Each structure stands twice: as structure tokens, then as C-alpha cells.
Length: 149
Ligand code: FES
Image 1 (tube, rainbow, N blue to C red):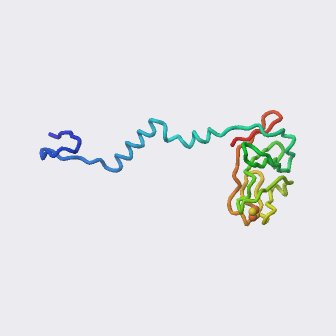
Image 2 (cartoon, rainbow, N blue to C red):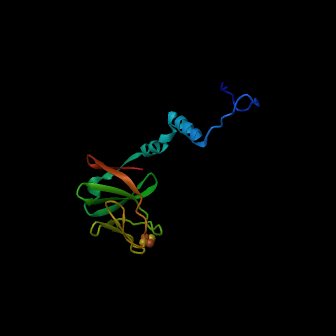
Image 3 (cartoon, rainbow, N blue to C red):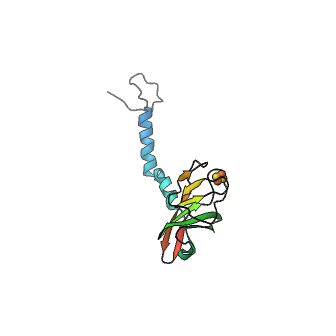
């Protein structure tokens, strides 16, 4: 007959079973899921705060304008009519501010070394930058543009 014990006994009448690593991790995952710790990243994303930034009319089609939101310099673009995007106002090459500018074929340009970025997605269109711009969620509600940071 098999006897259950804590594994600390020294009885020769039965064998002690050790928890396998897989069983231990599976149990740990179930406990974390049960207390909601597996959704921390989702919770953090939801925690972004939405700020009313400017009138939509202040960002004409084909332009990028700078604003300070929650102490951060951001760029809001309107690459196509009614489409607003927001980015961190920092070039990913060496950190120069991109600044207020007129879009050139839908692109933002860094005046420091000439990197270009897609004003809709923030993707690099031309070097020397290698990484896309940091993007924030921008939306229009009524006559105002809101940005979530
Ligand atoms: S800092 Fe923008 S291209 Fe170098």
C-alpha cells in the first residue's frame, strides 16, 4: 500500500515521490493565474492615461506639430485627412527632437542626420535610424485630439 507523506520521513516502508520540475511549474502557473498575476502586462497597458491635447484644427493634414503632454514632448501628425497619430518627439538614431514640420510624402524627417520615418506608423523609411519611433495612441473626439500615454 502506498502511503502519503511530506517526503521528510525516513520510513523504509514506502518510496518518496519528488515533484518533477514540470509539475512544479504547472502548479505555480495555476496559482499565478488564479490570483491574476499573468495579466499584469494587460493591466499596465490599460493604465495609460488619456490626455486632451489640442484642437484637431491645430494639426493640418500633412503636418506634424509638437506638444508637451504629461511632461513629455510628443509629435502629433495627420498623414491623411482625419487620421491622427502620436509619437515621442525623439529620433531613435541619437535622440534629436524631430520638431514641428511639414510632412514630405508622408514622412517625418530628422534634421540632425536625415533619418526619415513614416508619419502614419513611425517605421523607419530611411537611415541612419534603425528603430521605429515610439508610438502613442491618438484619437479624435469631437473637435479635440486625445493622446494616451
Ligand atoms: S539624431 Fe536623428 S538622424 Fe541622427
